[in-house]
Length: 149
Image (cartoon, one colour):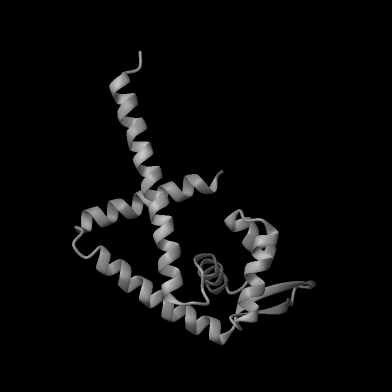
């Protein structure tokens, strides 16, 4: 028979995690807006992905982040208007356009990345190596399980 105290403790922990992740997401969006006015959190994420992958199609972005194609299209259009993303014809399939960061997009991304790393470094400065390693592993595990949804 299940232990009711353990079930209550587990439910409480899950509730705390949900609340804290929501708080984290809100802070992340607000912080992204302060880091660079042209890069929302979604824009930063998409631009980072394009940079890491050396470019990809908009449909690949939508699939990777489980976003609606229209959402990705709007974000990409805004990045293009800002001069941060460009389109190139895929050399393997001329019907396909590949999205890539422009030199200006890569520069802004590099600046924001440095600022974000500094901010996280400051926030986590007093954490032990063991706590940092554990936290990183937990976040990685959570995100891996979440990608399966």
